[in-house]
Figure 1: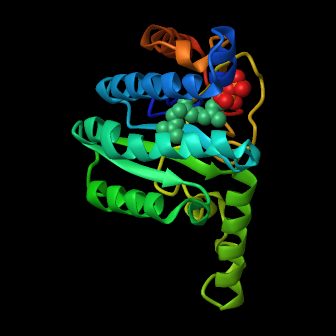
Figure 2: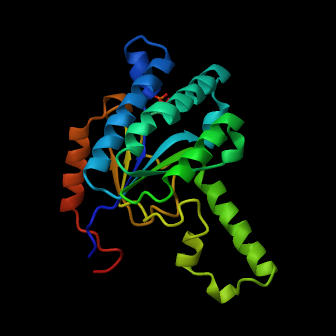
Length: 233
Ligand code: FPP
C-alpha cells in the first residue's frame, strides 16, 4: 500500500460568496483567494510534497461577465509576474495545463517563459489549471493517440493506461492522492477526471479565501489515517 503523499489537487471555490458575505464585489474575493493560494502553495512546497495542482480558471469560467473575466486575467498576469517568483525561488517547476490558445498572447508568452525557465527544477511542481476542462483534455489525448495509430506510428495493442496517461496535459505528474474542494460544493466539475480515479476526496465548507494551512494539515492527517486499497481487499 503506497501512502506517500505526492500530489494534492485543489478546487478553489467560494471566492464570490466570501466577497458577498462581506458586502464586497466578487473581485475582492478573487484577490483574497490569490493571497490564500500563495500561502498554501508555499506551505505545500515546504512540506516536501512533490506536486500541487490548482483549478484557477475553467473553460466554463469564460462565460462569466467580461468584467470578472478581465479581472481574473489581470490577477493572473500579476500572479505570474510577481507571486510565482517566490514559489520559483523554492526550486519549483511551473506547469500550466488547459486550452492555452484561448488565453491572451502576453499571458501565453509569460507562461511559456516560466515553463521553460523552470523545466529542470525537480523539488516541487506547481501545476496551474487554466482554461482547463478535463473532457477536452481527454478528447485531445484521444485525437493525438488516434492520429499516431492512423499514421502507423502506434499499434492498437500498445495503447494502455500508462501510455494514455502520457498523452494527457499532466504527463509525467503522479496522479493526485488528495483532491480538496472548498465552499461546500460536492462536485468534481470536469477536473482531472482520468487522474483522480483513486484519489481521496475531501470537501470542506470553508470558502477558499478563508482556507488555512492548518486546515490543510488536518486534511493531510485525515488522509494519512485512511487506508487506500486500490480495489484490493
Ligand atoms: C471559484 O470561486 C474561483 C475561481 C473561479 C477562480 C479561482 C481563482 C483564484 C483563487 C484566484 C487566484 C487565481 C489566479 C488566476 C491567480 P467562485 O468565483 O466560483 O466563487 P462562488 O462559487 O462563491 O461564486
